[in-house]
Image 1 (cartoon, rainbow over the protein chains, first blue to last red):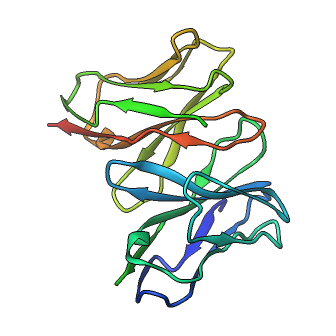
Image 2 (image 1 turned 45 degrees about the vertical axis):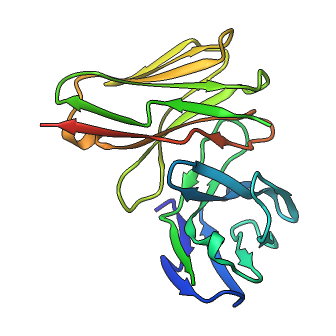
Image 3 (image 1 turned 90 degrees about the vertical axis):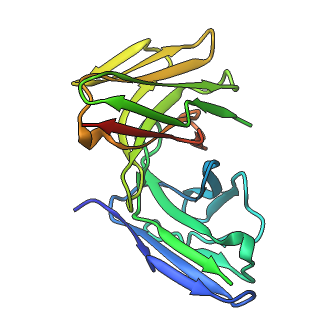
Length: 112
Length: 112
């Protein structure tokens, strides 16, 4: 089944404790992206990657890091999480051009 | 960068009636406009999209229209059913860079 898999689905952590949210896709897509979803703000892009070793900042990149060492994986790293990073996070992938993104099921992160 | 505005934020319709969601975009270079449906606890799912060289596209009970001159596009759902209840997001991008910008979302409730 074609899908984007994120882990974990739920995560509660403390301020300052480094964490990684994993994302993997099995569709051989070039494009991958991370979004955060907050009430009333819709989906805001954190980082995106157009191919292996090619990443770029989205609209809200502060406090996040990403890497794209393999085509299928695009982990999101929070080096020192803060409470304002409490949110629902989505990973997505797409072929280039007019393909449309396929989204993962989301990771609900709470930073206390 | 691209700015997408979406209205209304909530929409309640009687089963069988039509629902219309409207979006505007700011970047005249945008040429790809997808619509996503998000059900509770799930990631957004692409339901229909339109390219800038097309003014209208229809898929069963769902249709999208695009007015490039006015920079706005709309989603029309006819003969609404309870399973149409969800959050709907419009988005805009240029297909070459695929930095997808989303509207804030519309929560649609279909009353039985």
